[in-house]
Length: 204
Image 1 (cartoon, one colour):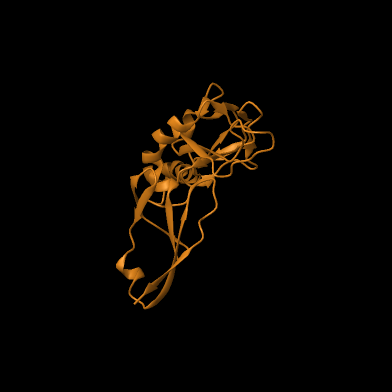
Image 2: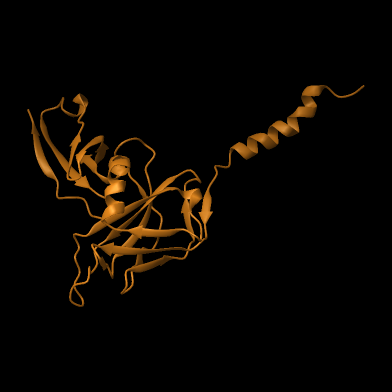
């Protein structure tokens, strides 16, 4: 008599369960190259960081992927040698250039410089990817990256933001945050920059 069909399926079910327990992780090893420009000038000494956009909704924190970040050379060129890890092949990634010298006198650093470019899914990056970072790519990235690039932090927790224009956002504060009299802190943060000094809000 042949064994029951259910017993024949048990090894297959066990192997399937083991496979499900392993989340997909993509390790990128291809080198990426690019150029940072401000106006018509290369930006040297700029700090380049690659981010995976947050997946927890508007205002969720992005994840930096480079450790350490790379620095653009005297001509604004940069190279990412690989070895970074994305949460998945479908993770949306973007790149930010912070600070640097946009063609001014030697040793000048302009910390207010923040330029970015949206790169799409991490799985699309390859050794043939060449990245331009300038004002045009920054403008193109502002709207799709607004939920991740302009975050509001209320008492240490992220809150939903809505982009009004390139310099202004609104923040949604739920009623539950306002039920108890007292004070609350509110700060803003952008990728590649430290959070702003918090302001104190009085709740009556």
